[in-house]
Length: 86
Image (cartoon, rainbow, N blue to C red; front, side):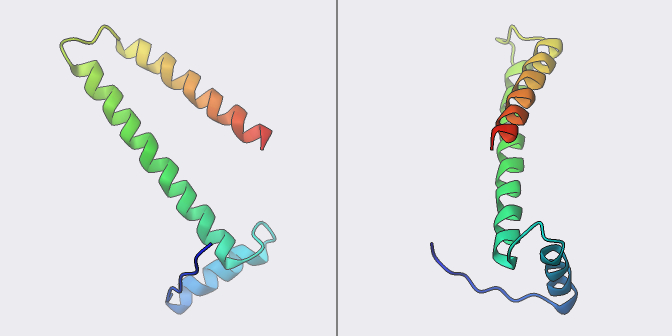
């Protein structure tokens, strides 16, 4: 694992320290790693949704908006199930 130093203004440092003090995170590093993972996940979901919407709007698509909603619900359910097993 590599190390990275960052500088934060006092209000942000206090916020991070507050998050750690709740006991949910063992360190500021753990909190920042969690934020980065959440951002990665959000961006991946945005890319997937954009690609799926692009496919839906293409003339070659046989999927309807209802199909997309069903696929999305199924995918989200699988993501939630994986979270529960961690």
